[in-house]
Image (cartoon, rainbow, N blue to C red):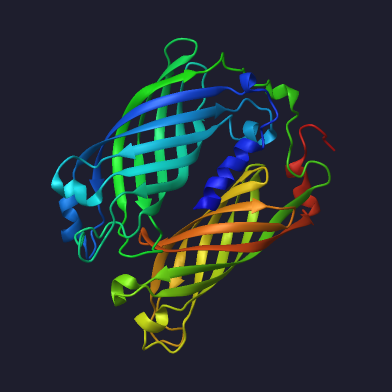
Length: 392
């Protein structure tokens, strides 16, 4: 998760050439009131005692983009920044088993309905959190939610912002905050808080206006000679899983994941396609001793959001959950969220968080290779893709 934090910080650093007074900094404070809930699984009865309403607080520093770089224009001038989050989970003895949480996470806030005086946005934040209490087989054996002090923090929320005066805005939001260690230390059922929030935001200096879009000519895909293109990428990642909850000692097992994606460019800011992967999970040798073959192929849908040299990759798919030589058929629905950083046009590093049925499976890191392929449309198809700027 540290690499995910660095990914967003790289977006901030990539626009670090302007003077402080021209950077559209904004400070924000919000109060949350939410409900803690836990998934209905084998530990639901134990974790149900923690389901409750709880307040929390956050303080954020924004940098509102204004079109200095092309990716800012393509994503409708998002804001990027850093949020500090705190919650005590309540004041009774049961809440004391969870302790308190302190989180720090970078975020990017995408406008959905951009406007001068009011706008609706979507906030995505990923970072680190510290929980003061964790599971202990003797001292805190009820706490199946969290198995380590250090965890990931994920925030997904919709925000509405309304200008009060020139530099002051009222902010309200509704969303989900999640804390988990990605199964690197078990038990790890995670903590989920659904909350609504309200607060105020203040520009440190008069905000800088967006650069006129006409200053940057619009790019049209495939505008010159009828070419189109698609991309393929190939990656290998290595993850590990903790099985201490099942076996009483800290036993870690490596997970090898090889994947390939075939994707078409939707626009300058995103791609969509299909992928295949092959997973070899060493823990299956313990949890599935009757299997003869431990390779698990999968088929997935891939969507990538592009930000200059960085990107976010989102996958949903089905993975084989029975031995390859089994006469029966069984598939597991899983999800994957990954961050990428492109060193050049081909080579990239990635960190991925894989879940199944919305439960953490493993975190992995790796490297990949990206190839762009170009091809010509058939002659009768070229007329449909004439450039509005350079008609032929």
